[in-house]
Structures are given as C-alpha cells and as structure tokens.
Amino acid sequence: MANATLRDLRKKCHLLFDRMWKSNEVSRSGAYIWLQGAMNLPSEKAHIGMFDEEQCKKLLHVLKEKRIADLKQKGREHADRLKISE
Image 1 (tube, rainbow, N blue to C red):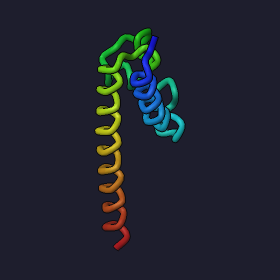
Image 2: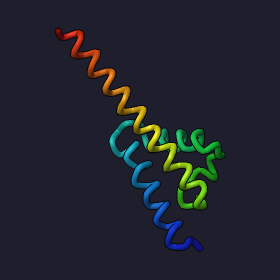
Image 3: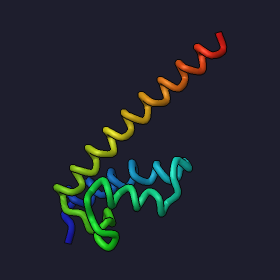
Image 4: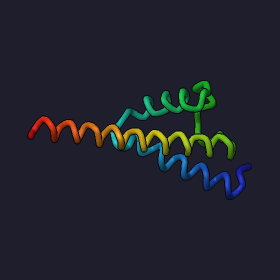
C-alpha cells in the first residue's frame, strides 16, 4: 500500500506525464512507449501506479529535463522563423 508521500509523487508524475498526450504532443499510446524507453521498463511495468518512490523521482527528473529541452527547441524554431521573415 502506498503511503502519502508515494501517492503525492505519483500524482505529480501523472500531472506532468499526462500533459504530453493531452496536449496532442504525442498519442496516449505513444506517451506510454516513451515512458517505457525513458524508464527502461517493459510495457507491463510502465505504469506510474506501479512505481515506487525512486522511480517516481527519476520520472519527474526526466520529464522536467524533457520539458526544458522541448522549450529550448521551440525557442530555436521561433528564432529561426523570425530570421526568415526579416
């Protein structure tokens, strides 16, 4: 049974993870395939509800790094578009 800390970590993971597919960045199934790769897990174990605290903390770190990389990429694309329109 999950304690309060683990439940809170899982909620935070889902909040960030679900943004990926709910924003249409990728399909829901695509997001779970990404999760398998990011966490190096087989499909049957790639479920946040099955994660322990260590796995949740790792996923939060990976998701935050992914978000930073995505924002940097969008910034570069925006800058490139501005150069083209000048």
